[in-house]
Image (cartoon, rainbow, N blue to C red; front, side, top):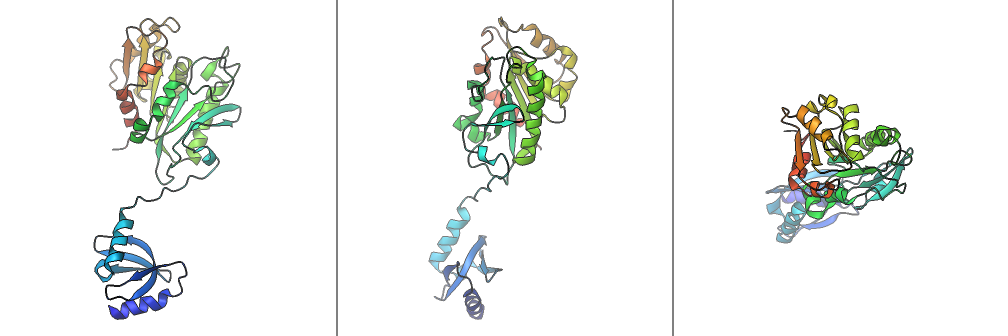
Length: 303
């Protein structure tokens, strides 16, 4: 062992950025830490990974190795065209003619994959990017909830005239929203089996429309106070859907959700929740339900 350490020491002189190590008998050597197990440490010496018994190191170096072994692995940096938007806050950008806001944790790890949520707002005359990020969308990024289910959220703006008097998400902005999702899938660390579409009012109709148009893209959907007709029920036997509506909604007739829910009542993967009151403004209440978040993030998870 002494001969080995002497050889290691001589070879390691060439390493200019290495750490100095001390053997149990006081000899010195230069090497970079690579990894460790309960009994051995691997050091990079002159470009070669060399395993050594921990017992051959000084007490101080053994303590150093244990400290390194317990440190969390540094996150791999996200690169690509959307990387500047990864900042731990809502960042604004544009895809084709579609303005959108994107949220992802600043420490997003490119070596992992995350669910993607496409969040569709309701009918609005707004044409300013950023204002479409409603309070209900922010429910996903509350600290405790986000720590449990880290994800990437894309919130496009249904710009004018489509968002106010036009065809909404069934028109050009919806097509561009799907295109945006596909571009995000190419560039960000997204779990392709866990892409979700959620929406409120016009966004609820849009959620159903986009899922119906892109069966292989979405793993589940949530439609609040707005959905398509029962003729689309066949779609949601393949893609789970949770509908929400209030019985006293004076803006969008609850009949829409009731009819689709009736067509889906035998499908265990689809759900319908009807509030007796709340009018058209139930969306905040809906997305504060932890049960909904648990249901959504479980969809598409591989066993």
